[in-house]
Length: 60
Image (cartoon, rainbow, N blue to C red):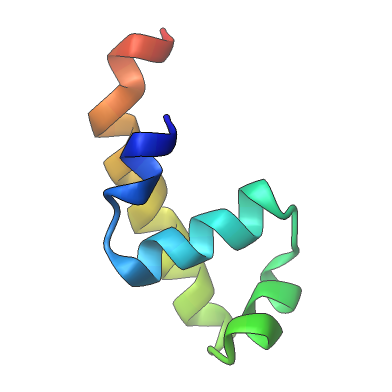
């Protein structure tokens, strides 16, 4: 799982790490990364979709 997270594109990795590893809210993540909340949402969504593709079968 960690290898898959490390392989994510930078923006997606930052969003996923803040949201799920650091357990920050969308608003907190936006503040920490200095991004609009919409960017946090879309980057998180894309990152999770990539992770599902990469490790989904392994976790099922």
